[in-house]
Length: 251
Image 1: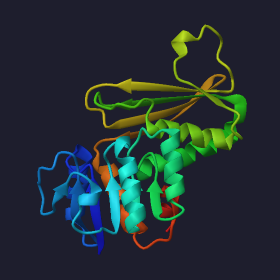
Image 2: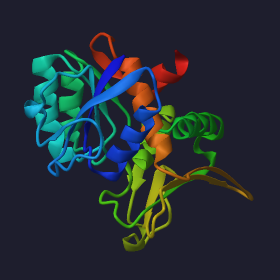
Image 3: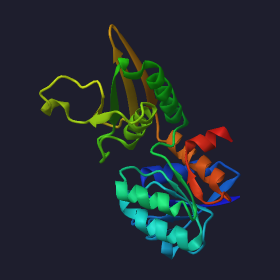
């Protein structure tokens, strides 16, 4: 039985994660961390991880980047595995995550959806086959409460494509200010915010007289919560290292 703490327990994703775990027999929630400590389940919610009454096996984090330093410190001191599902990390924070993974198991991905990770693999395959013959544009759509743009998932997709193309591409986020023709080495990235859109990502490969579009749409936040819980159960008992969805789907 994997003992889990939810960081960001009183957020929408925190509630969704707790609901997912409630129906499982291989894991349980023993606590939550949130600045808002109102309790809604049979587990206590405290303001910081250091206030937890019991050390968990794994912490699932769906809070915000500001929580990272405290989480890493607690996890390193107590040898706790981390599932980091928050987006908007800086390059310095990502470096800190990588450093921590040398001492504890860390599951880190920009998107917990199995479908999105399949989309990434399809995009890499398309980029490998199409090479520099097609222009590549990424369009992502999210709800009007999302702060970071472009989404972490869009960046993950772009990075995967760029690696396939030997890191020869550069990203363009703001085309309206560019009074020039499109560079063949560009990957355009566009963010749309509105309503309650959970998450949509389109990868457009535009060539001469043909367009190929790869798409993924999430109908609810549950797909991300399920992925995070699966990652937590998978991570329990694993040696130190940096894990992502590739290891989860290959088990």
